[in-house]
Amino acid sequence: MSEREVDWPAYLAAFHRERAGVVEAVLSRALAGDHSPYRWLARAVSATAQVVLDLACGSGPMSRELAQPGRMVVGLDRSEHELALAAEHDRGPWVQADGLHLPFRDSSVDVVTSSMGLVVVQPMGQVLAEVARVLRPGGVLAGIAPALRPLAPRDVRTLTSINARLRTKPQFPGPVELTGFARALTGVGMRAVEDARERYRFGIRSRADAELMMSALYLPSTRPVRVERAVDYLADRLARHEVVEVAIPMRRIVAIK
Image 1 (tube, rainbow, N blue to C red):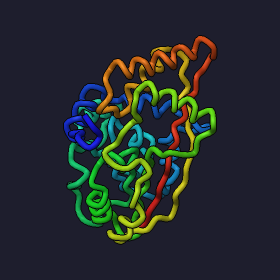
Image 2 (image 1 turned 135 degrees about the horizontal axis):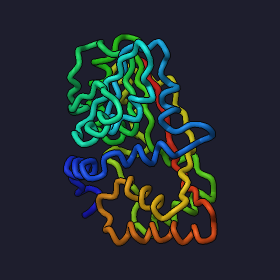
Image 3 (image 1 turned 120 degrees about the vertical axis):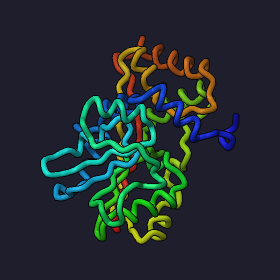
Image 4 (image 1 turned 90 degrees about the vertical axis):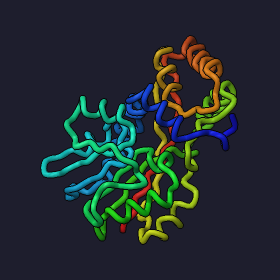
């Protein structure tokens, strides 16, 4: 199967049915200094925001990160399995819906956050149009997404070795570097006010850690034997190192309506 032939809706439904919570399990342990990507995204949300929509919330890590007295955080996702896991940790509210058709009134939300959703929910223009519709004037969109940089030379060597064994790179329905994002924002009456990057590190200390990380990747065209070879590579490196760090570069974009 080529990248063009991926049936993304079917793949994503199966992935999040079979591996609910796996993305949170990895990103919650990925650190840059003292913070995870979720904490970094939460720092872009004003303390005065009262109604926050967490788009493509998955198992709810951002919704929990954003919770504070006097604020309503609504987590929205298509996967009933991710939402069921989210509900085990917090009462919500949780909404099962499509990010292309948000079930909220016009100008009813102060902030929309999205961790990874901007490269998953497609097409981007329709997602942003819906976000702009539900945001009040002056409302904010804050999202994080995987990026291609920053990377140190040793990061490149490790990732290249992993990808060589997979014979591919992790894939997403949308472009990793959010190509055309600024133009799409302008088209719906929004403008970017921040575009920042951060390098996170996921520490692998056991074969189970390596298996966890590999299971969190979108690899729709990769045979299981290839994934196993990538796990073997990381496990073999552990024989020589106490910890093997895998870089996860992320990008944070903040826009205002």
